[in-house]
Image (cartoon, rainbow, N blue to C red; front, side, top):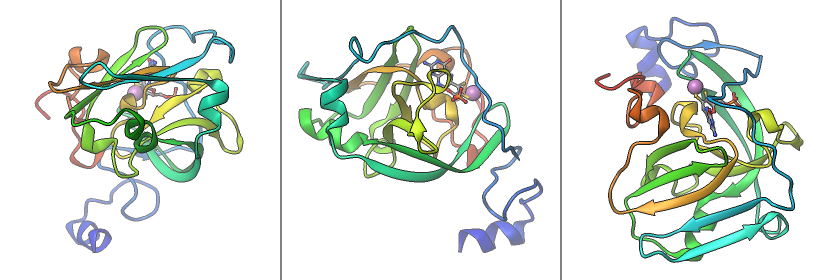
Length: 201
Ligand SMILES: Nc1nc2c(c(=O)[nH]1)N[C@H]1C(S)=C(S)[C@@H](COP(=O)(O)O)O[C@H]1N2
Ligand SMILES: [Mo]
């Protein structure tokens, strides 16, 4: 239904399969690296992932514990605000649902914190019900450090700046708080299909 609607509206003007490239994007087979700072050097021994709920309840996993959680393989399209889209990317990771369920939460927002200080904010419903993962594998290999290894957030339905690399902490919040790019004028939500690149889009 959605594919047909888009076709009739004539919105599909870029290359790529019908209905899979959001407005203003082009398809690439490269995997560009976009980082606001240096790649943190993290050993698997020192790596931890923590989820903190809105009441201050925390759960942390070391690498071994994290890797023993149930994992999924997902094939998704990703869309960077700098206009490249990459179709059918294959990831392996743990559903964010699995992590949030261990602390329990009634929070409305999630602020993801990365090793190195990067942050990005999301409504909780955008990381719930199988929409987001903590990914540690890409294309059948361990996730490259440049692309966020040991592990990154993956929220493919929003612009890729929401997919925090080198994720360290998921902070569940009752109030929204802008992350790094959001506070420099990127759109608070970042839906590629509505071309929400910058504040006011
Ligand atoms: N920690 C961290 N995560 C980040 C970024 C960053 O600079 N630091 N850049 C974001 C942006 S703008 C994009 S487009 C993607 C790029 O991911 P890639 O380098 O794997 O293509 O990571 C996002 N996650
Ligand atoms: Mo980006």
